[in-house]
Image 1 (tube, rainbow, N blue to C red):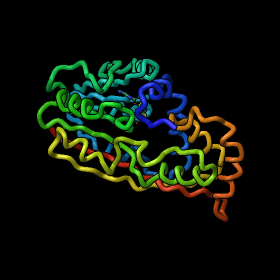
Image 2 (tube, rainbow, N blue to C red; image 1 turned 180 degrees about the horizontal axis):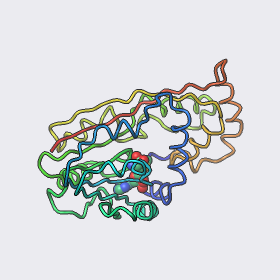
Image 3 (cartoon, helix red, strand yellow; image 1 turned 135 degrees about the vertical axis):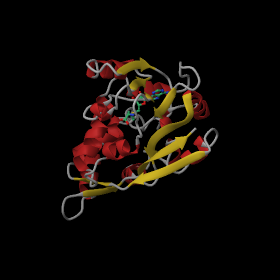
Image 4 (cartoon, rainbow, N blue to C red; image 1 turned 90 degrees about the horizontal axis):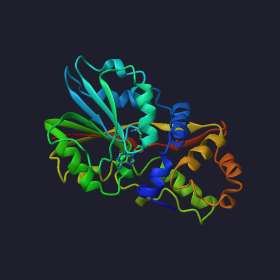
Length: 265
Ligand SMILES: C[S@@+](CC[C@H](N)C(=O)[O-])C[C@H]1O[C@@H](n2cnc3c(N)ncnc32)[C@H](O)[C@@H]1O
């Protein structure tokens, strides 16, 4: 089973937003914390008049859709991703917003001069990057002194741990979502960021999933780049297996662990 920073599978995975949308829908439908992860993330951002913001690995930009008007006067937002498909999507979505531009950028090589941005954002994407030290060093380089870096990510004690154990129980040949699948987590992120940043804080978002339709969980599993290429004969009966994981109320309870690093240059 491939790790989530395998460059080829990451490119295939995000050629468009089909897989990402499947995963976002599961969280929207079944998360127990109704405040919402995106709302929580946006509460951290300290925008100010005239600030320059760069988002890396922005995906389909869905989190900006209802929040783009929160940008203060004179703000300039660059939404970027290394996937042409994602950049085409956000370009179309925000074509009416003159303060938003879109660009193809690989976080490992950011084509901007030193000290350009007040804010850099990289949500749920650092674990896909093969050369993390280079990515962190690039982010640091393009930030202005006192600029802020916001990086949300997953923790090792959430959904992937649960699924790793359940899938092994279902079929011992399936070895997906193990501890070493994610290279940037809530647990090791501080060490990775401290190669450049001194001032780092981490915050955790409390949440879990209560899933009623096993088909939604299986779609989520198959949308990931760890499982997208699995031999389908290995998962025959998975639906029935997850059916048996439901409690007496017909709910599969799954823990989540996610959060946000805020690092200041
Ligand atoms: C899980 S999605 C997250 C999307 C969005 N940030 C969000 O939170 O909804 C990861 C995104 O990172 C992008 N990505 C992966 N590796 C990248 C790299 N080296 N540089 C820039 N973007 C990358 C993918 O194309 C994908 O759109």
